[in-house]
Length: 399
Image (cartoon, rainbow, N blue to C red; front, side, top):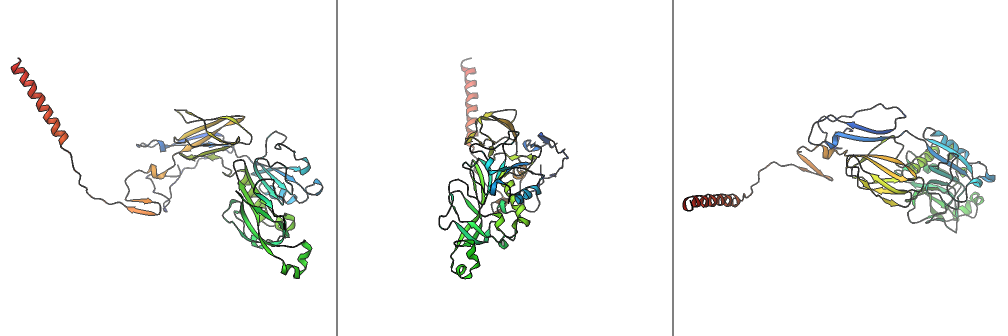
């Protein structure tokens, strides 16, 4: 029921308008909006939405600082505190991290994201995680053997359109002492690229002759990977070994982007709806079983969706608008709203122009001649004549 733009984003249906509803912050449940319109297409007169109270993202910060303290993680804590409205964080020393399984809070709930600062567990947990100055034990990411570190790397390029880099600028002014010589393969992608020099130690940076002779190599400074089980980002250098990066605006912005994109890629929303025909992906924090999807009324069809692993599923039979309920053993029921939300289908009057991709075709008014077959009508008349003749004959001859 949103407005359709007049600047080429789509035709404006007569009488279309935007409506704002004031709802309390703790509103929860399903929402059904009905437009009192009388037309031949009723399906676009009703819209649905699922309201969920805004819940902050639960983040666990695991510090691998010297002596098991949180030295160095202070700036990460400060960055997390900046977005206190949408983020709540908890602390854990690397020595207390469980050897197996997934860490949970005192309430028994899992964390939506884990930040590993200079510490990598033996088993990377499923879900969202950010590794700082450490390489996770995952396939297709490692460190070159020789050299394993590069010194004085400078940022040469970064993906400005990537969600991790949203709103960030002047990264080319970032000074870094050293970084890990990351090696990426498979599903891993570099988001920020640098160029560092090969030296035996950081002390050689003070010798201009050795720096001049040193070889320069390209290196990923920030990498990310998305799979069915995990969403992972790796920062290849220590934030302490930079020139005041934790004091700059870009650092808390980077932490915020990482938490939001890795933990909740769909965004922090309260009223969510999907387009009919769109594939629904549902992800659970824990393993689930016996998952079914109940379609919207009045049919209330039961479907068995395709599971991708043990924590996520895909469902594509979303042809009807309404509320779909996903049920699974080991998890609470979830509601998802699907609406037509198609201006091209709702506005179905004759148009003077039709757009196909980037090409626009003008409508032409004209006449066309077609052949009209008359033989069926003639055959029908002949059959009627024969029937009348047969009837008259029988009346006169046979009496």
